[in-house]
Length: 378
Image (tube, rainbow, N blue to C red; front, side, top):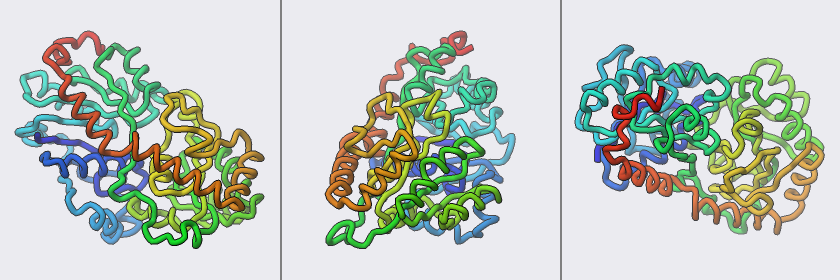
């Protein structure tokens, strides 16, 4: 099968949290013999920022980790017909130009032989619904939403059984426990957090559930990410955290392997309006075998086993207690590592998501064609 994916960027993970899952799924599809073609817009914001900050060397980690993947760029206003030539399946991520989305839908409606799916991995459907409703999806066969609560939004908009919950997952070809740990955990120290500042979506939560507990538990804290304004850097410095700037996603396993534990601080929308959707860091951390403590987050879909795969802190004080316990109790660390990895390998790998995707595509009988039910998506 020829699969064409339109993304904001495949090459860059600079402030682009979907990069891990996208690369992992496409790599798995390629390994199964599917023909993969990836398109991204000329001048993509994520890639432009990465190159401005780090030059071409900023792409080295991606290229080394994913030699089988590549992408091509299209110019603004390009005719999409040549971009999807011979395609059997076309997937369009929500971080794309609405004009491109509409043009692909029109081509599908005019007899395009490919199946056409919209992939939503953001909270804009609730935080900025008009931005999502601006996409003309009337020519699409369906929507892939990365959480059940997001799927419910699309169902309320008329998509019915043409929206599927398609969670993110771990690329376990690259994200796995460090192989050289003998004995395990012996050389690890301190706490690490990999995450971007978040446009004010979790400022208070970062201080309450990360910075202050790390200091109070006497755990040195390393932070990696981008878009930290001056006031954020001042807050980190005040709490004694060491800020390292951007790190390529492909380097995350090695970063995790140097530390005793990490913390999940969900953005506010995923802790309140869209419960059940974890950040990709939960999948990454558990796959890499690092103990994880989560700030308040409702695993509404039962993706994991709270208390076994990771610990949950309902307050900053409880976070401090959990971190201190992890620091002191090697057996606790090893139990969390074992349980979390077990859950990832049994349910949440990119191979599992490829199985789900192929099943969805196989289910797309002619009666599901969006052009035959355009009024439902209005």
